[in-house]
Image (cartoon, rainbow, N blue to C red):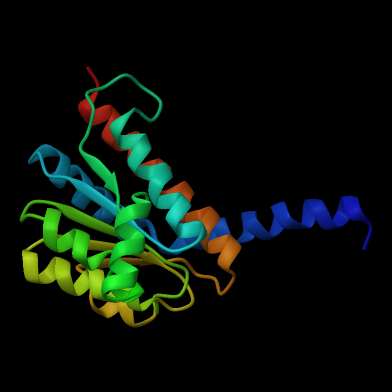
Length: 191
């Protein structure tokens, strides 16, 4: 395959996966948006976490809420649990990497908050541990997953499962879904 064809094929693959997601995930996305909106209305905090590229997505999303997405609006309480290197390394060293997010949920999470877990497999022990800690603290949980959802899908209040086994496509569509939710929240909280 020629380089140009190979490059454009990536976009065609993404478009096909996006179309499949649009055809099947509407009610799931609407429910997720309602969870975020309710948390924001009540003055709760949105917590985001994930590993690798999903950690970067968690940081990106927290920033969209604290700063803004596309329109001027009030700042929204949002925290990426992936950013404090001292905390991450201390928790990993003193406990285990499995507890890097759960320790933060235990310390910061309150009823009325929402923990948003980004994953492409739903199998990461540290996300599963964070979901358990959230349940114990009365914190609502929303996961975005793929590859069938993994064990995490059954441990959270709601899970959007992207219809793909490809990590890159899952991350691309999770971000698109999250941006769509941000757009709704912008409208609701615009100044």
